Length: 68
Image (cartoon, rainbow, N blue to C red; front, side, top):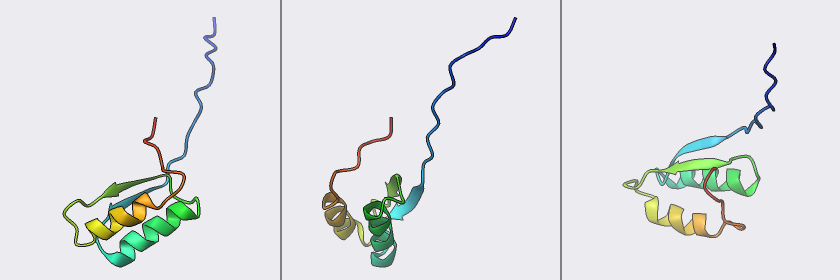
């Protein structure tokens, strides 16, 4: 007897690390979201560009939602 289960939908995630690390890194990550290339990012909360990166992040529309 074969167990046929419905296939699970797959999701491809393009993740960027270190938002807030520097103006160049943060700018590239923000650009990646604006162009639809990236689907997630992690923040470097103690990074030197943290404040500016958060300001830029808030300008993204529609706001990215947490992964489900």
